Each structure stands twice: as C-alpha cells, then as structure tokens.
Image (cartoon, rainbow, N blue to C red; front, side, top):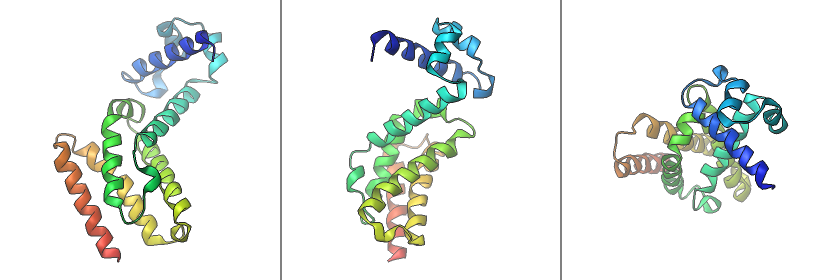
Length: 178
C-alpha cells in the first residue's frame, strides 16, 4: 500500500479512536473527524462510506487481533476448554483499552458474539460431529460469553484469581456433561 494512503488511514483511525473515547458513535461527525485527522471530507469518503463503516472496520480488525493473539486457537478441543477460556481472558486483557472504546455500550455483545462464532467455527472444523450437539454449543457459548463478562465485571480482581476461578468453573461444567 502507498505510504500516503497508510498515513491517511492511520490519521483517520487515530482521530476516530480519540473521538470515540469521548463520545458515542452516533455523536461523531465526519466534519469533526476530518478536522482532527487534518484531512478533507472527500479524502475521508474515498476511504469509508460513513462513520459506521469506519467503526465496523475497526471492530472487525479488533476481533481479528483478539483471535490472532490466542496462542493455541488451532488446537482447541472440548478436552482443553479451561485453556480456551484462560487464553481468551488473556486476549481480552491485552486488548482491553481498545475493546472498551470500540465496544462500549451496545457493542459488547457484537464482540462476544463474533468471538464465539469464530471459536466455534475453529473447533467444529476439527470436530464436525459436535456442530449439532446442543450441550457442546451451550458449553462453548458459556465459556466465551462467561469469560468475557467475568473479566469485564471483575477487572479489580487479580489476573490469576480471575483465570483460576474461570478455569475451575469450566472444568466443573465439563465434568457435568460427561
């Protein structure tokens, strides 16, 4: 990619993140974003259809980054769901400032639903026989959604306490399903 395009993209994204950290998405205007990014409106529209398209791009990039930061995602199975939840929590922790800005309010469910779908896709590619298994689907949903909200709602807990508790819960749930 042309370096000028890269610089413009970076300026647009940085300006958006600065504005988004201060106000809801619906209150951000292209005009104020362009002023902050030091670009004109036509430049913005050459890159994005509107503010919502920019937000969607950043959200998609963040979800991909969270998933990419999970070290053993390709080796997940139903036998190591404690590892799945541990690594997922660590991925949340490493991206929390970005997550808090982009997915504040209504956006939290978008993040967790997208992550859940991708983790299920990865596991069901390896274990297609479980794709229609309601118990396995519920367990995976609980692991992803539960891990996220347990972390978000208990950020004051030390990391090892949080991770250890979540792992014990997942292990107990797995035992119940055997």
